Amino acid sequence: MGIPSELKDMFLPHKKGVLIASPAEDRKILRTKQCTSEGVRAGFKAASIACVASAVPTLTAVRMIPWAKANLNYTAQALIISAASIAAYFITADKTILECARKNSQLEDALRHNQQ
Image (tube, rainbow, N blue to C red; front, side, top):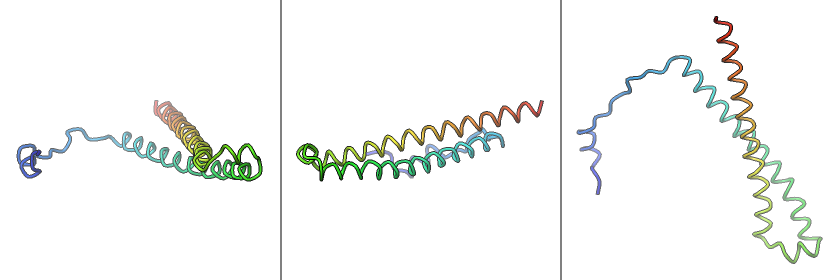
């Protein structure tokens, strides 16, 4: 029960923005995207390693230790493994993005200092 898109376009035509990004802003946006993708890549690698590193002892313990066999059902095992993977992903991605942002900030300061 909304306004059909044809009527909306008739009343509110699409206008292009008045502001145009400078080349410096375009470079900054590009570096931000690169930092984000680098963080995702590093986080995925860390999560994969953490998954294996937590799955092997968890599954081994469930088969060999009587307490673990009695108390850790499939859900508990999955939670242990996924918690380690999720934590590794977010910690590594955050550190990688912050490190990249710090490098970019130092680069901008150096370039600004050289121009003066």
